[in-house]
Image 1 (cartoon, helix red, strand yellow):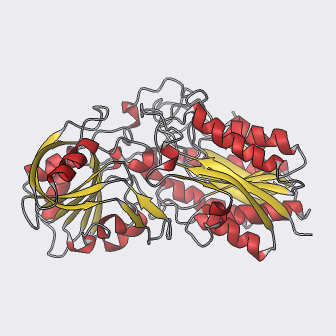
Image 2 (cartoon, helix red, strand yellow):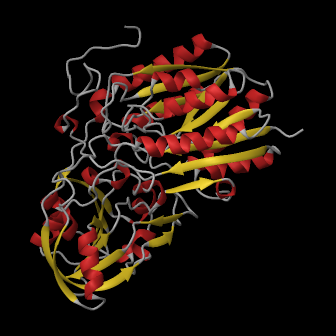
Image 3 (tube, one colour):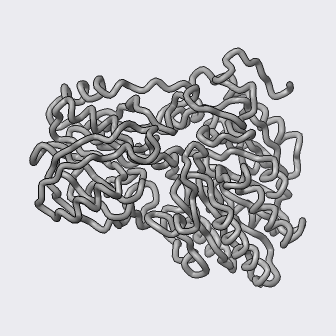
Length: 503
């Protein structure tokens, strides 16, 4: 008889400094979606966790029983209605599945709710209450997980991403399925240990395309995974823009029935992160300096200016104007901006029509934390419904959308091409430009509202990537945030803190 595994989940990364809640409707627009039943199985072959989960299930003749899988772009806390609706669908699907052997859960790890600081823990608890203590539950985790006690109490094994940008999502999904199958077959008895480090870190210090402090710890985790009796070793950078007691860096090690060994390695990885704490600081470049460097570059150069403080992948407004203002003040040519979210500006361009010249006040309207509105005059070159297929290292084969999208040509042909959108997004694929008639390899400056995911697709074409200093709720300056719930003391907010795992 085939092994029967139920799957589903809820995945969203929550920025608690974003005042707009993430509603059930938000899970169903733009790049967000709720997949049910066969729609989950149709994710086979995509660059998602289910691309790996389904592939591994098929290799092992697993009967994979899909329930509900909701995923939303990063944003504010998830509404109670949205969470409970999807939670109840998942639980009901498990109840209706009959006899099952295990649960493979698709979650993020940094979801917060409007009424609770932790979304994943309560979801796991609800599932555990249905399946009981004997049915194993395994889940892959995003590298930016904020690990709660409830998550650890209710899951049998976690395995986290090891790449940022997250180009290993299918691989991690497959590994989670491997661990679950080995558990079901009695080949392993997974036990977990974890260690929280009193450390919050900017996202950019977790990037694994260079030897960042987090990558050094992840490299050691890979070595630990090769040791006898170790099932998985995970280093979590945490998501610093979620104001929770348990926010921050953490480590998890899963072993085959050896709790002491798991704790030994979790402590070792935690100590390594702590020893590297000073290296997690990020120092972005002033915008004017970044633009000047780019314009002084050789002919044919492509400079990526990353607006890391207004990153759609971190749940920001996506309407920051500091970079655009800098381009205008420098009278830059051969520049493309992805993107500024401004529904009113999009509508004005649509009303005017393609070819019309419009004068608009764009951006800076959502929360006042990402710069002031900027006046621009340009020609409406393109009006697009906004959807396109991803083709790069992240999410290949999946559909992305930022809603209605307009390309505004400022300062004539070859000037500044500004994308205005209905919805925020995070440009992590070259098709964020190509789908809208802009060839990124032929522009001197590309402004991207992204913390790090852009690197997977854009680093190969970039002469240089420059992280710019701009205002916003994904700023690497963690001292600028008004934390109220975060445990203290914690580094770098309390720079004189002394700590070791034994204390």
